[in-house]
Image (cartoon, rainbow, N blue to C red; front, side):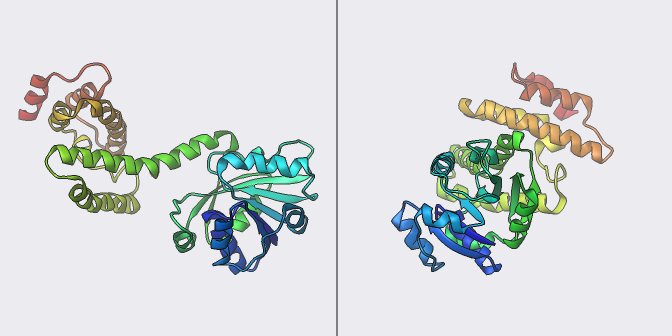
Length: 301
């Protein structure tokens, strides 16, 4: 296929390189940033074209600008009649549906979204990990999207356009909020006397071990720790000593952990002792905490 790229950021550059390597032809790029284009030229010697030159030559247009500019680019193309019948416009946003590109119902184009489910810190990093990256696909021509993803060495998944915000929220939780969880853990280590740099260095092997367990045994079996064991006394001890601003965060995560724990035990043909389950729910509930004497009595048997 002959494709053009509008927006030569990390994703646009990496996609162009890998598609060229797969035998497709990048016929030109367009960007407002001189520095971005200069970086692109370090990877591919492709001409920078005006939109009036680029669009008529392309079978496929990758619009890989920042999310907030995708609709603006589509409107500009539509207003200036820069399209050809049957052309495919593709964006790579995880949060926006493909039809954000369809500014008029009468446009004779196909709209598609291919979202790489990965955090790319640089072009070099993107090129290194595109192989095996999972992609969320939705739009008019998902079969074409699947072929493109496979040419990139990726793994395609078809998602529901109407629920794309939930898909993106899941990606944010898995990626961005993992960093937030690490920050919270470092903050708690600091309260215990281990300062930030040392704390992070000591937590990373634990986090890697947990990711390894997820890869090996999946959900919910990878869940370990006091909630998985049903140890209400340990959980209550955490709540007794947590900084007040972190209590509700811990409780919310704990309730989700308890749900996973129940699923894990059910898969094993087991269940929490009812008393322990009640105490955990009481400790982690939004209203009130478990009676400490009751938690202690349960721990002593």
